[in-house]
Amino acid sequence: MSRSKIKGVGFYVPDNIIKNSDLENLMETTDEWIKERTGIEERRWVKDDMTTSMMGAFAAEKAIKNSNIHKDDIDFIIFATLSPDFYFPGSGVLLQHKLKLKEVGAMDIRNQCSGFIYGLSVADQYIKSGMYNNILVVGSEIHSGGLDMSNSGRSVSVIFGDGAGAAIVSKSDDNSEILSTHLHSQGKFAEELAVKKPATTFWINKIIEDPSEDDKGYFPQMNGNFVFKSAVQRFEEVIIEALNHSNFCIEDIDMLITHQANLRISNYIRKKLNLDKKKVFNNIMKYGNTTAASIPIALSEAIEKKKIKKGDIVCLAAFGSGFTWASALIRW
Ligand code: ACO
Image (cartoon, rainbow, N blue to C red; front, side, top):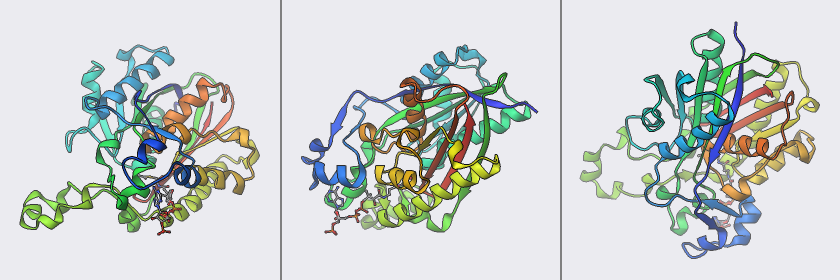
């Protein structure tokens, strides 16, 4: 059986920086509140003409370059997003067109903050089975256009940012490999963090019949405290699950990259696992929570900053809407 590895990564964030102080002009909030509760100092928000697939394409181009492959070597696309360009078709096919890739398969993944690890897991299985050789996995999100900027939406709106990250997953010809992926879901809590409209539960005729329906359902709704408590529990579980699977212990982790949901969540996990600060990479301060894009953006930046070297054991972990949660253990 083949083994898979991440051959190269890349990311793209829009130039437009939105500082916490800019949000003070849009809603009743303060830089102090946002920093203290989330660790976020600024985030990027797209300007009008940018799309989710376009950002994914920019990130993908960098990942292709960093992998030293030609774009024609890509034989499958996986696109993770909760904010696709269209209701349908998915953003994967739009990416295929934008990058002028061969007419390869394109799959969209709808698993929110865990989407990139879900995508990585699918790519890993396809490479292991021998079906494909080089798979482009993308996470890209545009949140900024769909946030409730009123006071009732402020606890959610201040955390989200726009951005994209990408990875090329290929057959491994050396010691680098994806050692395991673990995926979970618990739909009982689907409505604790959701954007419900537009969707089939709220067909347009129902909205017209009852205009009051046309309300906050278009914006993300989150039971923040409950999500926070669930996140810290599931992150820890899924990291331990990954380590146990490979007979590793916490000390074996060289770098932990958690989905950038909230700096307090990441710090809580670091302390709970007794990990040195140097072994956990965070960049939520600069980009906010970019859901499916957050892990590939953080991974790309950690590599750029030379925080990860060949042979390191890297653990990726995510938790988000669904609920879904997931981990990937990688020998870099
Ligand atoms: N500015 C100022 N005050 C605010 C703001 C704001 N932006 N937002 C809320 N407040 C106020 C509230 O009104 C409340 O005031 P009250 O005590 O007078 O009622 C107070 O601050 C506390 O509000 P909480 O919502 O309880 O704040 P909390 O400490 O829980 O922080 C947060 C909110 C940051 C969203 C936190 O709950 C969190 O990070 N949750 C987890 C997020 C997460 O992990 N999501 C999963 C990934 S995202 C995905 O999957 C799509």
